[in-house]
Figure 1 (cartoon, rainbow, N blue to C red):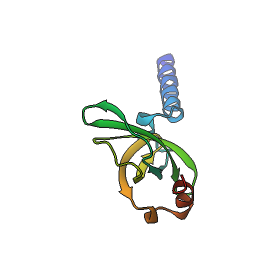
Figure 2: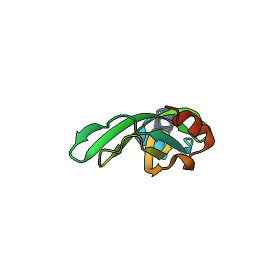
Figure 3: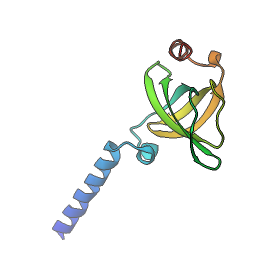
Figure 4: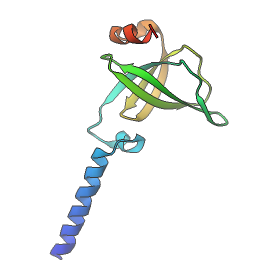
Length: 116
């Protein structure tokens, strides 16, 4: 009985450890240690056509403090070139995105993103 409980406890500890250490779209969504942040990007290339009505974009962007981040998200339509987006992300998991005007971005982001 003690061996069974020990084995179950060890297996549970390994699973929890893996959940906290592995970063992908699924684990980041539920991991309480990964913080939500806004990442600002400019659509400067065409999205990858995945299926009818689905495009994937992988872009370099900046968070509120100006730190560079790579973000991957999808859209149901091809997005307008040179548009600025605010992407609401939690690690690699993207919750939503919305188009913003350059004046609506933090100054640290404007300095880096608009000169591209």
